[in-house]
Length: 87
Image (cartoon, rainbow, N blue to C red; front, side, top):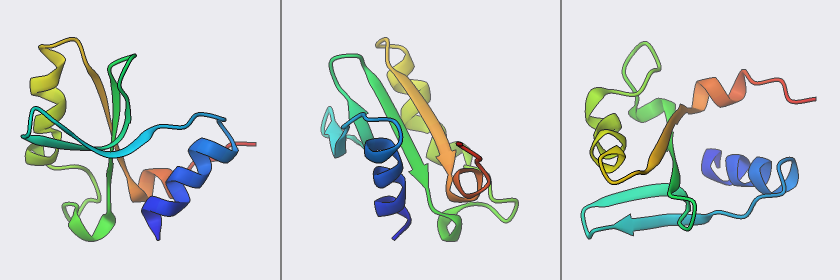
């Protein structure tokens, strides 16, 4: 449900159409990817996050390693997304 809501936000409010759930180097699965621009979004569900509702270091690992190849990977938690105001 949360993945669907976030994708609806990207397509409906931002008018961008990422590739969902793409595997990079047969090692990392990025939740939303703009491949040509080397931008990825990792959307972390609250039920898989730490008690403080932030992404763990293990969840941030793909972003840290792919940054060495010129990627920009944004880590976003479900609770952060729910608190956005985007009028």
